[in-house]
Length: 542
Image (tube, rainbow, N blue to C red; front, side):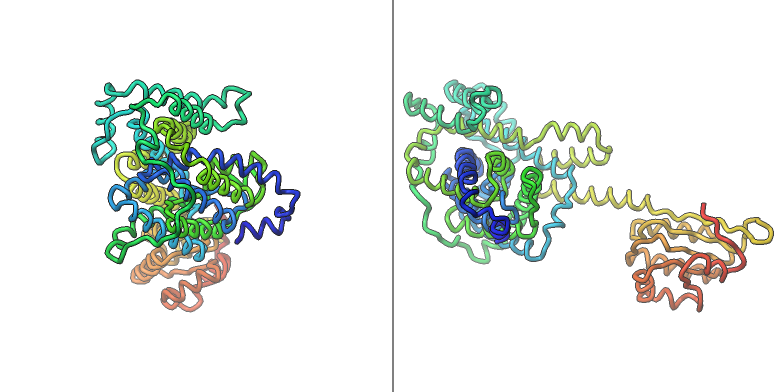
């Protein structure tokens, strides 16, 4: 219970901190209400399942997570993944995959992989989140405009279907959608309304209007899903044997990876706003525990929600109490106000998701990175975005990471420098052709092995001194290349002297058998001794 313990150590459970955190929790609960239902419907499940998720994850992550101000629940980033799992495996399959993802996240936390997951490059993160934003935006056209049910499996098929059927839009549904979109954005423009969450304003106004007018052609939660049940369901274990678990391993890992990325990003944002310091491994464990418990109560996948976390901090939240209160507010809504939800128009929830998709895409950051970042990073971002939209999120992230790693290796390899050391003869002051010295600057790893081979093959002298005093580490590929080149040099009659290697590299050279290949006294601690052993000369660094 990292978050709860940290808050206890800081004295944030004291009564003097209750008021601010309770107020923050109420505000976040109000903000989370329409978002939880909208995310659930867009993910292919019932609206109440989004509320179940926000309630369970809100409590568990607030107490067991790695940040004392983190607010968790269903998020827009999951929509693409979860809707695909529901379409292929059903709701029961989604809940089983969520539980498996929770166990994976717990394992990530226990294995202390939190710091590793944070190393995913920014172009990849921006690329797939912008791609998810585009998919969410296009995916809500049907509800926003009142279009026929979408057919097609791939994005381009669905997009073309929606474009062809746009002339068939329903005027009433579209008018409600545009009005709702205006109300969602209105508090940002009108100072008097700035304290009112835009999604809540749109939800209340549209629901009241539909409750009074009862437009028959307007799709609502009641007409599509029936009335919301009151309260949480009894816990139950998702059904499924080994034959069902095996096909869900891939989707479960996808949920776990995306949940880890989103939660740690949210925790970093929270640290910057609240001046806290999160524990990434505890955060992964807390998120995993939430995803294990959530499907037991009929919920879906959850992760740290950046917007709700930021809202809680700005509203005065400083402790896990705010997250717990936010969950209690949603539970109270289920108990008391569930019957009123039947008049919520689906086009209003689509309008809310339009804004979520725009915020998620971070178009300004994407455009700035494309314009100003190195060309390779811009290409990786664009490729990840396109693959997310037109292929698959997992494929996009994998290819984006692989390309980023390959680009990094290319840059690292080019930074490894094998340069000659000028050797001046002590008597004549001229270069000594009998002895040649090379200094390696940078890590000796597999991508730099070719540079080492070329330096050896270009050396035409009786003695070659190789200085390793600026090599921080070396891997097996480079060490094997070094061993092969020393053997080839010996075959040509050239003496090779190694010098300057630190203790770790000397130990690796010993295990590789390279030191035993050298003559006695041909592995020395520094360049001066090596040159003295090779012949009378003074090193002069270029």
